[in-house]
Image (tube, rainbow, N blue to C red; front, side, top):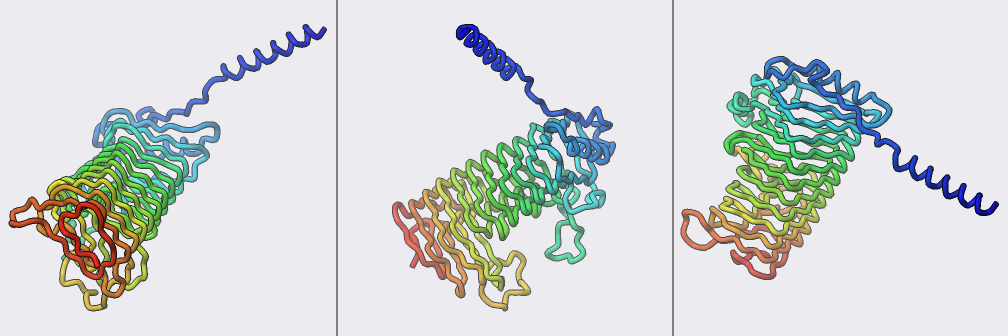
Length: 394
């Protein structure tokens, strides 16, 4: 009897194991946009077809959804994808999404918007073609108060626990990717490109974000490769190639930048604040490590007298109230096109504190003769290891 019970128990366990291992994997439901009315002829506006597919995928309750854009050129007017969704959404783009050439045909500030979504994954080897060439001559707002408002390529607002991978963004009208109030987001393998003289085509721009990781990404634009605005915390940037462009500018707390190459950019490491900024903002806890500069105009540049189009109307309102502190620059090396390879121009009212330079080796490689130099104003810190140019810290 004991033997029978033991055999029955073993048989039950085996059957249970078979049931468990043979249970079918739940695959996402695929929504191919071409099968839902989208036409890849580069002419037909597919905005309504795309939003219709999004609504179905977003509302599906059982399992995840996958929206698939196959090869082909899909023209899109301004489009907006809004959550919250009932399930995780995977958006795979293998084709080309084509923006209107005429900037007036996009009736919103961002060409492709994602809002109020959790667990969003955007991937594929497709291209977002912003067709910005027609718009760039209109981008003259510094001298024309009636300049048109140009759209960014893709924007994320209130999107969490999400990622974008391997997509190419080409020739944006304004910036390429914009993030606002986005948390726990990974950007990897992305290619961002626009001509070096295309105005205000920032690669990645973010504000009020946290826990963003940017890695293995190539950015070449006419403005900042990565622009980081106030309210952003815990940002990590690694293995990013920047150039052409203006480098990485920021106004944040908690930033780590490692293993970056700046090639032919106007700036490398750059922190800028308006001279007249009256708001008391703390910029702190930055680490830059293993950064290569190749013929960069301003490899290390803190500018707290920022004024892009002088004369600035706020110039006479006093020194910047932005406090910069706890900044570590380690193993920064390569060549500078200007003699002044290290320029630390801080606020007289709120001097930079605890700036740490370790193993800096930036040689002058420009037309002016002589070795590279450093300039410091209102900076307190320390230096150690190899130091080219000679440091000027207090």
